[in-house]
Amino acid sequence: MMAYEYDDQNIFAKILRGEIPNDTVLETDHTLAFNDITPQAPAHVLVIPKGPYVCYDHFALEASDTEIVDFNRSIAEVCRILGVQPGAGGGGYRMISNAGEHGVQEVPHLHVHILGGRPLGRMLQRM
Ligand code: 5GP
Image 1 (spheres, protein in one colour):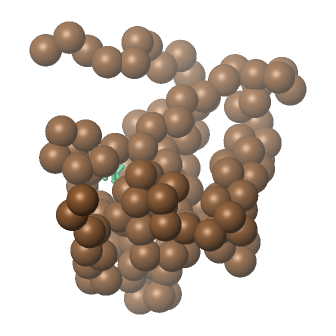
Image 2 (cartoon, rainbow, N blue to C red):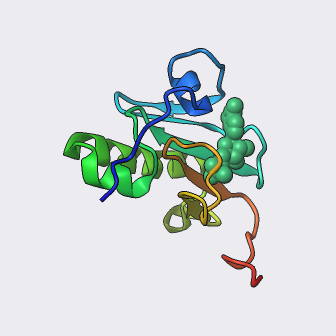
């Protein structure tokens, strides 16, 4: 298997180092969540681990259990903050994590998009 190479000049690495501002929704020891700069829905938050992981499978393979639990609990907490949890009267949400070329990943630092606040349509368009 090819090893992942992390580019520490990517925009989310700069956000994590405080070189670029962000509109923080939640911060924990291992995770940061902030509003997307170009929202695609009334709620559009990006959740990222603080560690240098390129995409989800990289994170799932190499992150510590502590980081993985923190990241996933942070996603739940962001859903609570946004009021989109369907189990708590919210309208629901979609989680997306794009990876690599076919996934059309623009920023090579793992991020999960949480989108909600309106009906989001079908998952994929036929091309
Ligand atoms: P991707 O296509 O990699 O899954 O999504 C990258 C996301 O990052 C896009 O939704 C884009 O709007 C967002 N983004 C890119 N640059 C910045 C930035 O400097 N700040 C914030 N908050 N979001 C950004």
